[in-house]
Length: 158
Figure 1 (cartoon, helix red, strand yellow):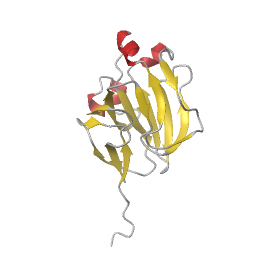
Figure 2 (cartoon, rainbow, N blue to C red; figure 1 turned 60 degrees about the vertical axis):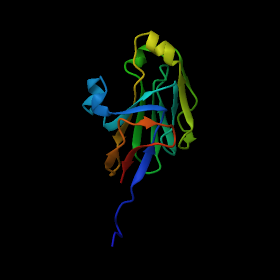
Figure 3 (cartoon, rainbow, N blue to C red; figure 1 turned 135 degrees about the horizontal axis):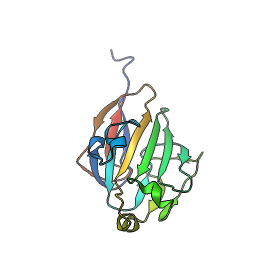
């Protein structure tokens, strides 16, 4: 019958670039899923977009390297730009949203100077972490693929 079967939904690419499994991120906090399950993209440019429709729940003050989104299904998501980029204290980062803003899939969230980040010795690998799945389960991870912001399927859940 499928009357109570959950529909499969999608989180889309939040950047252009190469997707990688979260386990391949060279940081134990992310690779061991301490903050939650997820996926990462090695961006080809310094632009991060919304992977879904939802409300901005948090923008990391001063450093601007991380932000939270609560999607329409109540899932709590974290976008974390780079590894140890908090140490830059916002240098080269510009947030285009603030807490409480409603965003749509593909909306520009943050820009950063990718050249500066790399020159300062940081990686700009960006993680999408499902901090609270709200009774949903992740069913597929589209890893090791070329991603296009807002159109490439990154994660599916039900």
